[in-house]
Length: 398
Image 1 (tube, rainbow, N blue to C red):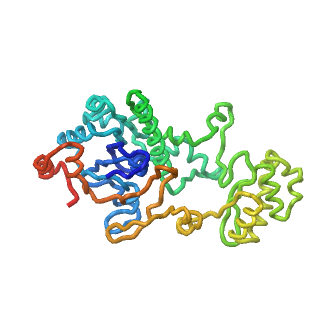
Image 2 (image 1 turned 180 degrees about the vertical axis):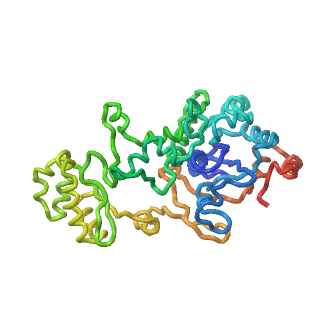
Image 3 (image 1 turned 30 degrees about the horizontal axis):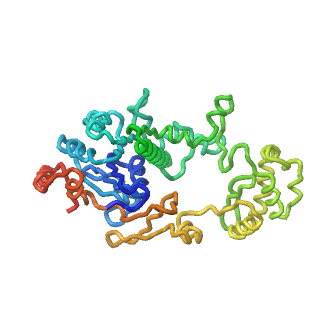
């Protein structure tokens, strides 16, 4: 039942809940891996988070697309025994429990890799599997704070801010998927399988460009609101009906911006003649640009700047993105029907020309595939599955 794609034939056993580990599974499943997600009998909390369609959140439908769902109680020895059987058939195990939990259950990498020597074991946690903070719980917001992102996204002299998203989780899930692919490639080339250790904090740190290098030299980058340190002009500017972001910090593109604004002389102005000068006079320059952008609509501004070869784009909300002709032309918003509800499940990047990813089905019901997966992967017969169902260790979708 795997989605044909670059990872077709790879079997992934996903343990844990919420975002970072499961997003790794989402990416692998989107590109063709057969992903079996183990879910607690009470269900993953994301099933009830944010916007609901019926009794299930649309976030769940997106995050659990293409996954087969098994509801299993890992607090019981019988449930853990089933996981061990499933792990024998897997190429990859993904888990995002607090470090030590899987070992306490007898399901750590040493135990499972002994059962399955080809296994790639991916671990996602707040701080990583080693170090003095390894046992602390890890949430995206905390990782963004500890990893320096929240400090940089505030206004100068103000409180830190966050995007209305779980960036720390998502970027960790991406790094986990990358780590899994690297480990699989190493295995396919004859190397030994290995453990992939992903920290939310360290994943956030990889976003910080040269800020840590700068700090080691005594230069601590500060929050800069809607701009970016050391480059000008770049940022958001008000139009008569919205906001546009303009990036014109290169010398030639800045001169093209000046021409589009009807101010070609700014290109030779001593205050703006090169990037260091523009940074030193950023507020004067931004006021001049804002004076022009306020006189036009967002559409007019973007059109004029695009014709002039100046990067510019509207600041869009989600509804505007859904209606964007560029994304619509690339079929980025396929629709699915789940339980009588029509919804969009956006595509995932990147796009592959020969083995593209895709959504075969939206995230399903609790325990929807329990019986079939235990038959196919674990080799259990109907009687054994019936015993697990009767004991409450296993739950099916009925």
